[in-house]
Structures are given as C-alpha cells and as structure tokens.
Amino acid sequence: MVLIDKSGDWRANAQAKPSVAVLDAPGGGYVERPDLEDRVLAPLAETRLEIVAPVERDRLLGLEADYIILWHRVSLDAEFFERNKTCRAVVCASVGYDHVDLAAAAANGVPVYHIPHYGTDEVADHTLALALALVRELPGLQRHTRDGGWDWRAIGNAKRLRGKVWGVIGFGRIGMAVGQRARAFGMEVGFYDPYNHPGIEKAFGFERHLSLAGLLGAADIVSVHVPLNAETANLLGATELRLLKPGAVLVNTARGGVIDLAALQGALAEGRPARLGLDVIAGEPDVPVWLRGDPRVLLTPHAAFYSVESLIELRSRAAEAVLQLITSQPVSSAFLAR
Image (cartoon, rainbow, N blue to C red; front, top):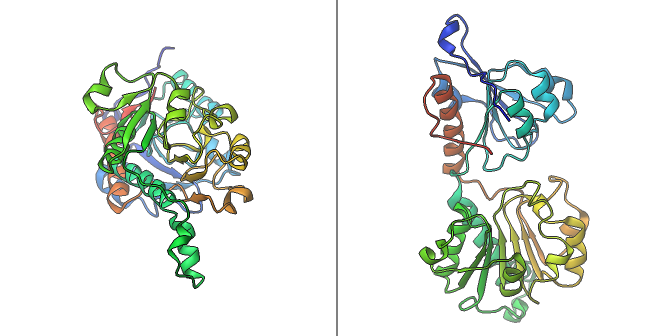
C-alpha cells in the first residue's frame, strides 16, 4: 500500500502554527495538562489537551489537529482516518498501537509512530514483582496477618525459585529484561519468539523453544511480552493453557487480549495456571467478578509501565517526535508502527 505524503512543511504557512492535540479519555487520564508537551513544542506549535469519552464519537471524528499524541484508551479507526483531513501524523504514547487502524492510516497518508523503548525497566520489574508475590504467597500472607494471624504455615507450599524455569513469550526489549532478572534469581530461562534472530539465544545463554507448546510445558513461571495483533489475539486459549505445568504461574503485563478470558476462567478452575498475575485484561477497565474474587489472582490496574521517571520520559519522547516531524528532522524519539 502506498503511503500518501501529507506531511507538508509548516514553514509554508508561517501565519498558522501547527496544532498538536494530546488525546486521552476521561477517568484516570495520563496527562492533567499538556505543560511538558508545550515546553517541548513551543513556540513552533499550539498544544492542547483533548479529553474525549468513548460516547463522544462525533466529537472524535470531528477533531481537527495537525498532529495527535494518542494515549491508549482512545482508538482511531478507519472512519476517523477517512473523515479527518487535517491529521498529518499520530504518535502513540505507548509501546503498543493496537488501538489504531494502521491500514486505514496508511491509506489516508497518516504515518503512525509508537514508543517501545521508554518503560522497559518498569514493565520488567513489575513482571518480576507479580511473579515473586505469587510464588511467595504474599497476598494470602498479608490477608492472614491483617486478620490477626501470625502463623508461618499460612505460606502454604511455596517453592524455591533457584533452579526453576522461567518461560518468556516474546523476546523483545522487555522479554530480554525479564529473562535477565529471572536469571539473577538463579532460574533457568527459556523463550519462544519465532521472529527474533537465530542465535540470539547464544548471546544470552537462554534456551530457545521452537514452539509455544514446548515452552508452556517446560516453564514453572510464564510471562507474556508480545504486542496485540491479529496473530497474537487469544494466543493463550484453552488448548495452550492446558499445556501449563501443574502449579505454574502465569503473568501478563503486555496486552489483555493475548489471553482468551473465557478460556482462562475454565483453565483456572482446572488449576492451570495455579496462580495468575495480570496487569492487563481484555475489556479493561471492566474486570470480571470471577477474576476480582479469586484469591489465586493478583491484579494491578495497567500500571506496569509507570514510574515518575518513565511517564516523564514517555511524554517527552512523544512530544520530541512531533517536534522532529514539524521541523522535517529524522524521527529518532519514536518508531514507525508496522
């Protein structure tokens, strides 16, 4: 598909500065005011914050801005790109970009960028935190102690980490960081990633699995680090979840849609996984009651990306990418979504 060039040159119309819309949804937004973005982009652009609720579809479709910094709770579909005649580029303030119709954007001459390199440490740390809390039975121990107990046997059948196998699904930046952290705990590390370079397992000293089934059957802890797309949607369904070892821990800090929720409910009833850590859930922020009420499940509200430093880095990189686009510089602060 040919990408139509709508970039233009802002200098051609010196009387009007390019407009930049920071686009988010209400309730738990990421940007209270676009002060950081404005510091990066002033005086070359006019920056504003647009909070658009899912029900405000007409307002979204009528949004006018030369550039959009898009947070993940707002989706831009084919109709948006077909009707919008002002948008020159979209910069997703996120690792993922499944909330944007890339084919429609390309057909209408709008390049889409994302920022996959801002929060690697935070997501990797959060993944380890969920797994360690589950392995060491911390949620149950806290409930026991808060309820007045003081019996170490409340920890149940906690197992030693050293010598166990950590399985990584998706061996990109975050998957690599998780594997290195797991190895620091004395664990063996394996990964499944059919797209990563042959031989990369030698550089890390990890075991490469040539099939997802092989990884799932070998690992004591499994963590998910893949983007959400047509290939990875419901990647872990009923068949895959039944391949988990008895007692296995499953952690997802990637995208909720990678795990089939209906299949997960049945798999949990069968004890595979035995314990589950989720920072992302299909349909979030709506969380099924059966997930909220299961003591084997540890939930966090899509917070793995966050630290004070990572949010500043993410917002800065998104604004810098827009600045590079406005001034016709090579875009080094973000990557083209493909």
